[in-house]
Amino acid sequence: MTNARRYAPADLATFCIGVFESFGVPHADAETAADVLLFADLRGVDSHGVARMYAYHEMLSAGRINPTPSPSVVRGTPSTATVDGDNGLGLVVGPWANRLAMDKAEAVGSGWVSVCNTNHYGAAGWYVVEALARDLIGWSMTNSTKLVAPHRGAEKMLGTNPIAIAFPGHEEPPIEIDMATCAAAYGKVEIAKRAGGAIPEGWAIDAAGADTTDPGAMMAGGALLPLGSDEEHSGHKGYCLAVMVDVLCAVLSGANWGPFTPPFTLRLAEPERSVGRGIGHFFGALRIDGFVDPDEFKRQIDDLSRTLRATPPRPGHPAVEVPGDQERRARVERERDGVPLVDPVVADLRVVAEATGVALPEAIG
Image 1: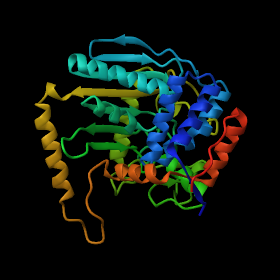
Image 2: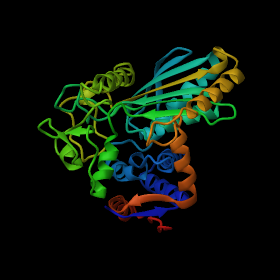
Image 3: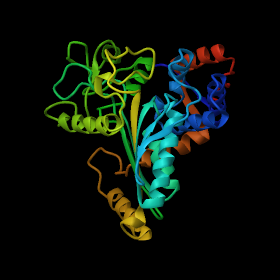
Image 4: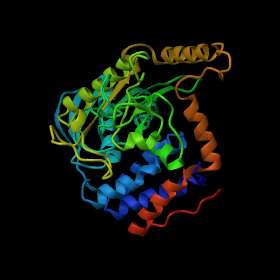
């Protein structure tokens, strides 16, 4: 198993900001982008944090991402909008469009924004936590490069297509749902390969369409499986959710969908053709008082969370939690002890540091 070293979150944020600025990304945008990445690392979503800096560095170096985009609304109503992201960093365009959705919600009760001509936007959960800070219910989705086989399929056709939504509580923490629509995120397969480990059964198939626990076999022409994995375990449900995300993020906005969604890294092959512009996101925000008294809603969320946690666990299983508990626990630990990075990720970051002249911070443990 590959070793991991721990780094202070603030040091990693400074490093990411410096790298983005070295490509001409404005300071405020670089700070936002770094915040999105560190959000993932602090919550234990290692696949979407600073491990992605090598891919961003590649894409910016190759001129594949516009470092100074001017996102614009190309169509809209008081509660809806379609945004052209000007081929900017998804870590910048996504927050811009998410703010627009929240502004619309505060003004008219709900806001819905689809985005085209953008790039990888980090962890879906960051955006819904931003909505919580404004006392809103937030939604966030993105489509992504083809990595997932459709139900019963033996070839990649869909992205990992995550969905996130969050509901504020009163005394209890919010319920925060953030999940890929495949059995596991591609980044988790990358982490397993870097760590020299296997992946669980039901995550992936190899190039011949056979089940595999070898992350390398999945990455060498194989595919991830939709949530549920197979016929017996209701893989059609994850497949349907992934299609829904593609429609809302891409068909609705004019972005590329399905197998034509462009890659977020130069290490992945380009699609055969384009059917739109860039990748797509979809954001939603709801004002609670448009439906119910906000205090009553939050009290009910508290009651729901406490009721679920009080469920007796199955024999041999830990206590029942609500969505977001695990991530909050990881944040406490990582803010205290630092963010763990496995050696192959550190090696990638050293390449980035050498290429940009931005010093990689020293490990703290």
